[in-house]
Length: 423
Length: 40
Image 1 (tube, rainbow over the protein chains, first blue to last red):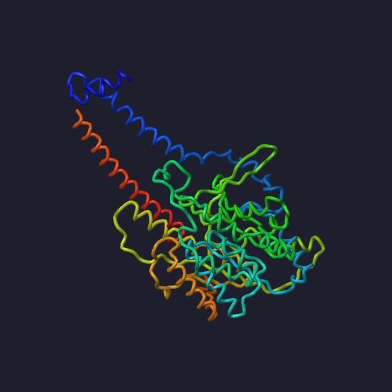
Image 2: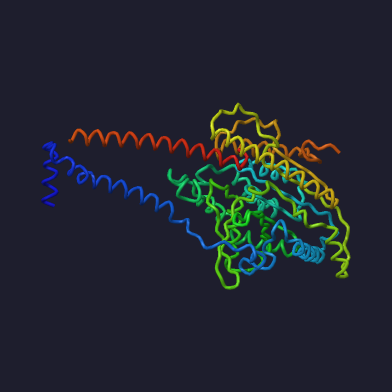
């Protein structure tokens, strides 16, 4: 210490002779502190990025979250399981006296804060008095957050309204530090969104979903299993009806995962045990694969009817109608794109997402045509002119909610073909 | 020597500020890019 003090004294004295030796020794504490800060910041960002190995694709068909039967299906490659499940659902609907009644399917798309459009439309439709009780409700991303309320009917309209008119960015995410983009799994923390989902999806909602599931009604949510690059359709009713002590947490995880925009929100890790070994699946926004879905095209009603006949059950013909709410515009608004990498990337991702939404309507239309299901499409049209002000801006969301509400109240002019399609 | 140290620290502070502003700009840009996945 005395030696060090001596050296400091020499620096102050400005001795040229001692400079080569003394400079590194004197700066050492400063550099060490800086280095420590960087390391600590890095460690803080990296702390939560550990994970268990992904489920090998060869074992994927053996996975059963919480050991719940029919808890989920792959959108592609699960045809036999889907047909068998559809038969079970038909039998449940028959027992509930619903098999011969007209059935409606509602698909709510992703779209971030544009989900306010669908929320408003559904509530306006309720107020109008002719919103059906949907036999099946599907949701992706923001659509996954509104789907449980749409599924349970107008008694949950106030919750739906609150989600889209009473929140802002702070209720959805918290920005992380500047190193998060390289040292973490997302640029923001979705803890506020998890807290909000946890507040809304309480035990009462879980038991109501379970009750409706027993009648053959379905609530389906899509996430993307990023390890496998496959869409997963979660059967929320089966999970709710399982009575498993961790069922509610799994449902919250699924809703959060479905709304977890990659890069912005962290992925949701779902623990899976297969053949005694523990794995983890990484799930992100279902919008990475599709903006909206009705049911997998691999599930043909003709096939279901054949299976029912083979099992000695009579299929009762009934009217089926699909409603697709696209929480977004069909085409991205025009822009004078700057010649900069980030501006070009931004406009490209927006364009790809809008185009993906249009492509989904064609896939859904093809499926409905094959199965004799009515096709109805709603979307944000050019008559909504309030400018976008940034993620989850309360003013923008309220204006869009009111726009959807007024349209729903007046009777939405549903479009019966995909955009640009001529019969 | 103390002057050199002062200049070094001042330079380091300026460089840090430039990096900070640059990182902020890149972060905001990337945030916009990723928001594109939601259609915005």
